[in-house]
Length: 124
Image 1 (cartoon, rainbow, N blue to C red):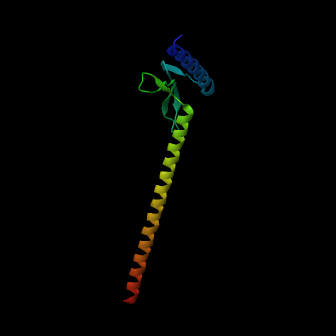
Image 2: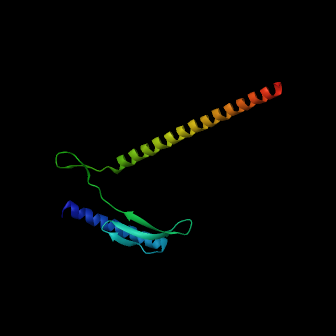
Image 3: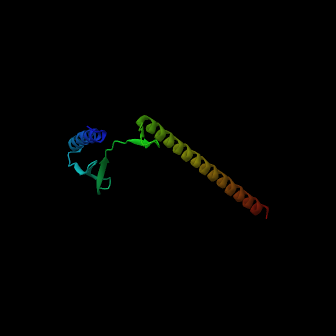
């Protein structure tokens, strides 16, 4: 049996398990739409009908330049994704801090301008 055939059997096994799990959990139809995708109806918070697509794939990895592949490492990919999310969260926090600092500076400038205008008005 070739690696491609083994991967197909594994993918089909997982698709079947996921289909049964989702069918039982949501008590709805879970329909195959391609060799590696399932779809099921859903309703959003506003009551609008939506469709969920679940994809299953078995990655080969990345090419090594010598006609082969460097195997896919899910742990490494998960760590890289976690770092990306952490970096984005840090950037967002820094942007929010800059925004709040600008708001505080602007408020202080407005108050100073208002106080100066009051002082000018009172001296007249």
